[in-house]
Image 1: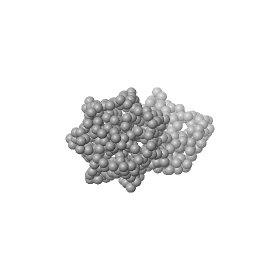
Image 2 (image 1 turned 180 degrees about the horizontal axis):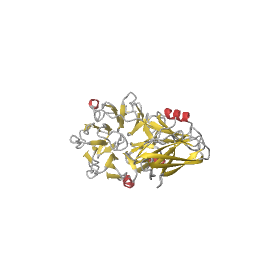
Image 3 (image 1 turned 90 degrees about the vertical axis):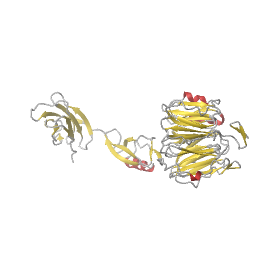
Image 4 (image 1 turned 30 degrees about the vertical axis):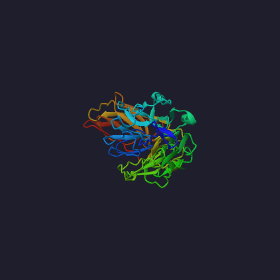
Length: 482
């Protein structure tokens, strides 16, 4: 038996502070993205029009009323006694119990996400810092010193923050190894539950620390996960195919069926509550499972929060630098991506091996996205001759200064970008005999296109005079030699 805001309730350990953060992306929610939030005695739903629905399952829950809320972009449910809403202008509204000042958020501005921890409210600001109000007696006030944060999540009496570099920081109680999040890396989303914390990695696997007496941290075998949600004694994961997995307590008298999510499909978000779980489907409908002791699931199957924007499946770009072109393409394809463009350039690397890629390795992109690869042409050509190019006005026969001349090899690859001097002259460095440089000139005059420049005799000096028409302005790019 534990206390629920000063009232004795026989529901096992009290979990006052579950907050589920559904990220599309890891910033403030858009009003067009519905969301469900499972608490303890109240379930809240954000509709696509920015209004909020609630199922208040406990008649004595004080003063919850979201009927007048508009322009809400994210919701969070504090243990069933309060509901917090983030508005599109970065301000925050709150309703319900305020015994510890957890609803004193009216002065907050510039907020991109809200979260809670045991009668406390936390707000992530657009500059990566965090504000807090309510009961901070367990060390949660350390969040006021955080910087570089892009997501926050709160559990029973602890708070975690995801930094932009993929690492995680912790504040609050240090029991049960909760501080071990400091060793995590490559994390893309976090969720704090009762006395445990779960982290989603960039490769779709999951890590967890904290209490594991009911197996709520047994997530090591999970793959293909796109969102995680930590409850009181259970953890739920959303898979890339729209199904869900769950681990933890599922059979005790007070915790029946909260992990029974295996038959759910077409999901875009999951939210683990105190002893139940809800899921948002892509058509805006909601499913639920687990304890309905307080009536917090009554009528949830009748909800339609509006068509959800399906979160893109994110995958990490593999590192293909130094790989041969065919091996690199196979590696990209196996990562559920595609080679969108090939480029080439001179380098010291072996011919047809990858020397650069965009996006870089480790960056998360939508499944099916394109990756640009640049292959090595081998060593750059050796310059063994020069040619003088003079750009003159066709009418006055006066050299034109400031003309940009771009030289390329016979394959069209960029070698030089030069500018004519005060006499209209540039000196072109030429590869060995038989190699061709193709140039284009940019100027205020309309250039005439000339034949490719070719060094006939090794070491010879060639003087090429190009005339330009002064009548119009244009830019011409020479065509690559066939």
